[in-house]
Length: 117
Image (cartoon, rainbow, N blue to C red; front, side):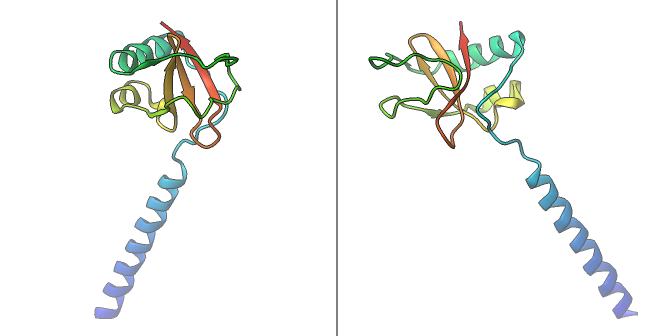
């Protein structure tokens, strides 16, 4: 009696582990492009702009998709409120520069989306 119970318990634990690992592997990853709808952009702007610091753009820097954010700018983690409202933002960081919200890929610091208020 004990052996079938142990075997069933072991199989159940194995299935749970595989399911958890699969779910972890499905977490969204940041890329260098992000295409938010206008509604998502407005929501992100409203959620982030009210608490973030607006920084001045360094000389020669133009905030455009695909550009790398200079190391002199402070890049911040995406706030929970913004991620809750727009789940696609979860893997990204951000900076507000010269009145523009820059959605940044944290792995290579490239701008994935530029949002203006």
